[in-house]
Structures are given as C-alpha cells and as structure tokens.
Length: 245
Image 1: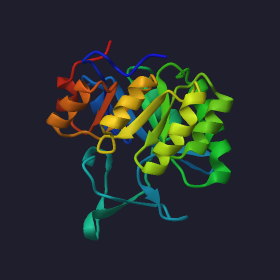
Image 2 (image 1 turned 180 degrees about the horizontal axis):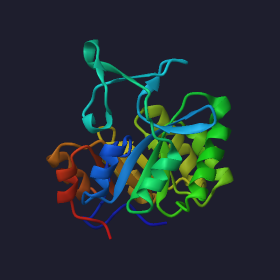
Image 3 (image 1 turned 135 degrees about the vertical axis):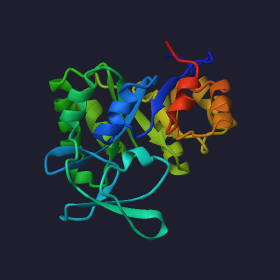
C-alpha cells in the first residue's frame, strides 16, 4: 500500500462544483484536479444535488453554507440561513459524466438514508459509470457506508473512499481497515483530523483527502502533515497548492 503522501503535493478538489451546470463549467476550466459532487438516489435515478427534496413535492431545501456556487437558481431565502429552490432542471449522473467526459476526475459523494435502497443505489452507480467508461476518473465517497459496501461488491474496479467526521465512524474504520485491503482510502473532515489520527493513517498506508478547507493556513498545515488531497470551495486557494502528478 502507498503511505500517506510524503511529498508536498496534493490532489486539488473543487468542493460541490459538480452540483450544477454553471459551476461544473467553471471547475472544468479551473486549475484543479478533481470535482466533488453530491448525489441522491430517487425513483431509480441518481440526481445531482446537495439539497434534500421535500417529500413528493418538487422543492429542494438546504442551509446556506460556503458553497454558494452550488445553490443553483431561483433560490428563496428562509430563516436562520435556510433556503428553498424548485427542483427544476436538476442534472442526473449520466448527464454529469457526459459533460465531464474525463476532463477532470470526479469525487461522487453519496447522500442517502434509506438502507433498503443501498443495493439499488450501488447498482445504478456501477451501471452509469460503466456506460460512460468513467471507471478510471470517477471515485465514490460518502458517510453512508452501506452503499459503499454494496458498490465494492458489484464494481470493485471503482475507487471508493470512506468519509469520516464523527468518533463512531473513526472507531468503525479502525476496526475494519487493518483486515480490509479495500479500505485504504478516506475523506476526513479537516477539523476532526489530529496528530494521533494522522500518525495512525500514515502507519497504515491510508490515502487521505481532507474536506472542506477554505483557510490558507489550515491548507498549508494539512499539506505539511502529508495529506493526499485538499477539498475547498476556494478555487484560487486550490490553484496555489502544489499539484500531485
């Protein structure tokens, strides 16, 4: 296994820039290596969006964050930073892969809560990625590990990353990784990363991407500690980081 990055170079990942067509075009033209995307499974299709859908209504809701580029059009602001927008013209995974066409790598982030749909979600990912010949440039990550488990079973050729931001997830990863050669790549929330975790990941040859890093000093610190990838909303910050070959 490759150890955690021992050089000063990183994979530069544009956070949420794949979630709508305008942001995707911006990221495709930017000096980044990878574009992060959020995806949901609904009615046999994989939809590209971060927001939750409000039941059967064609309305999406979320809380405004730093990824303003991912919010899309026709946004209606609500209280406490929340917003609504109509579910109009939302991309599906097939269109996203067609528009990207291998120009950049994609990091597809699973958004799911329904365990009974995990196998179908995984099969749809595998089939769509295969239909577009994207096995070499599309990776899948997420905090909902049942979909990752099922995807590994049906499409072991697709890179997967276990996303971690809570102590229980870290503990599960510690129990799983030593005996599982397929669990050697993660995405980890950068504030959850500490010296002890960094040392363990390095000792066990785990490839590490950190999200979402919008502060330059924090990014430089993580690069100096050997992380393999930095996810950020700030394209200028990403462009200034040393690129991994």
